[in-house]
Length: 245
Image (cartoon, rainbow, N blue to C red; front, side, top):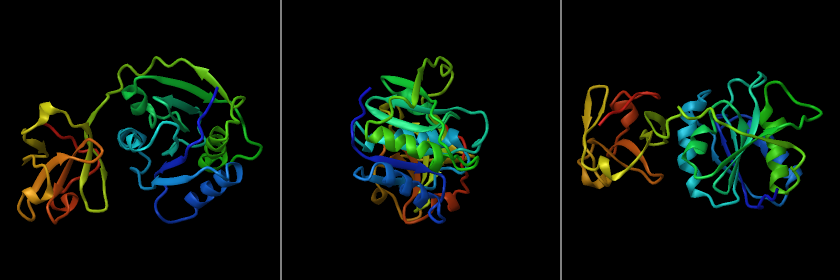
């Protein structure tokens, strides 16, 4: 099995402060010192691997073949859930088998799963990101992981939706990303969210200040925004809210 050396991309719900990102980066640099580490996102939906999975599946397209994603949104850390590696269309994902990687798999043209069978000598029950997933991602990056994984067939994702018509993330500006990929069939339609009807616009400048609109964002998802305002606050939006057209 050959793993292309590219970069390790962090996707977590650890938050922007605290020691956790730094601790994981230290492990990565010790094992793979010449591999770039990119902290893509540290505020994925807290303890919600389902919502996070749709965000991960969209954001991965900004990275090239060979990228290794160290993805940790893991409320069941220390439980019997498996630790896995997913190869999907030339990219690699390391993380818990709790749904976080499922959307990547069902959207991919080619997906192959492996269970992590390697057990570190010292492994905290509450920080597998540092003690288990981090070392495996680093070893994959330097092509030293052949004995750490055991492939398995997955046939339990037939009911996992490829898209999710729910709010999955709020960015720094208060814009609400959904888990629904934009397609031409949505053009010009009215988006409805808890009894609010929102029209489509292509750009922020196409609507009046403080006006709500929806658009295709830079990651290809349907997103709700307010021009020079915060959609999250002004429209009283919450994670997991359903949208409809």
